[in-house]
Length: 537
Image (cartoon, rainbow, N blue to C red; front, side, top):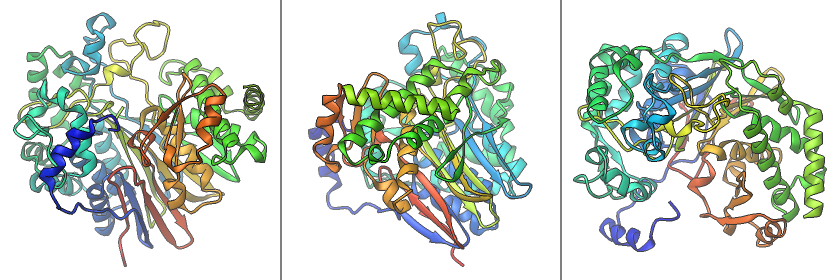
């Protein structure tokens, strides 16, 4: 978004005139439950379910379907969904691994680099409908037609295009114009919808109504599946109806856990990135107090190196939970290893896709942290006439060179994932749930919020400036909101500086809900269009 040409934006904004855009409620309090999502209309969908007697799972599923309508660049029916769930009765916490799958006809030789990024060959088996349906029917209280009502209304009646959606569409307009998504997501198939415009999706509304009446199975084995097959086959796609017929039901997995400042942290296991988050937290706890303040030059350098080292370790220890009972990955979670890394970082300092997230708690103590995506911004940039949703481009998320790599591209394989939906307990009492979109910035965003929560309010911790360090040593940071000597210190230690907007879309979007006494507090990250809300007595 930051790279969109300023003069292009200004030209379109002249058409907008003085129209006032909606300003979402970023922080909320309720005694009846709480939800925070990356779009305020999805938050309204989840709050509606809580007010109707639904539980946290009902609210999460309704909001997730709604996000696919009002945040189409980030998620939708054509993507994948991962969930971390805590059930109060029976008391247990578990992950739902909703990984998509490569088509059975996919081989490394069948895709060029361009094929993997956009177009019909980039598409893997969508898992979002299957995962949301499984969660709802297994752990929810409401039925699928009721839960789909808000998303269907949003598609039929429309919603206000935000400035962020306009900017993101402007950034990808060339790729949308070249492909079948243009007819659905561009004005007259050519230009982005302006901020403030009402964006309606009647074709998608029809698809959602069919899911409500015919069941999610129709997406994989019925009329919707036939339409998907016909479109992809006609356009050279690798995904066919026999791939869809093997419905990608989610797999329940044991969360990755760790200790942090007297709390127990539960986060997402492989293929997600929870191990990376736990390693960051472990390393932080081994640092001396003078290194723990991210708002000082020394603390910022330590932070950058901690993030970079954790990602190097994840790169070195890929792990497929379905096929490799790996032991070496557990080393990342050990305290003695964190001590070693902390010492190495201190010595070094002395010498030198897109995605969406929602978090929800209900009054009974159930919790959901859900992250879903169509991989890169606007996914594969293709959509089937008669269905109206974007397909993912998860074929770009496989390893193509190293045949021994557990995420090497092969038929029916699952791609890498960077998700880390997280739930934190103090003793046996749930304290908070949070997560973020942002590809490899997900864990670094969550890590910084968790650390700042030790001495900040939830709103301040989410609002605070962030940075991220890539494997190559590039530090992206919200430079105008930090001390001006921090970039200098980072450069002095060999880092490349990448200055971002004050509230950068690039640096994640944390959605947080917390239990504070008898109240629930929700915070939606100001970096996107989210809001927090809970039912009022």
